[in-house]
Image 1 (spheres, helix red, strand yellow):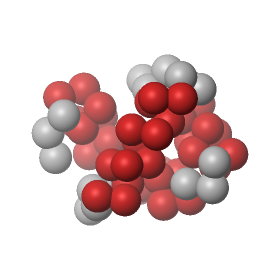
Image 2: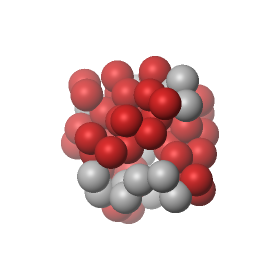
Image 3: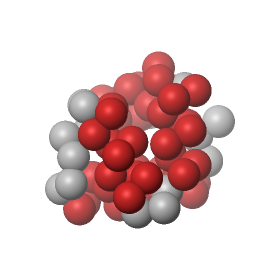
Image 4: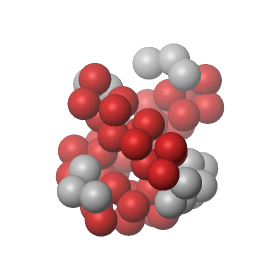
Length: 59
């Protein structure tokens, strides 16, 4: 489930410019480096939901 905490972590990675948000492995690495372990697991377990949110902003 896409929680508010995970959304905040997605926005933090996006705003940092550390990774292209379409490169999931790079996003996971940037998230891991920042201690965003919930986001790392969310991407691993919910790739389709991650894509939907990043590309459309819809949950």
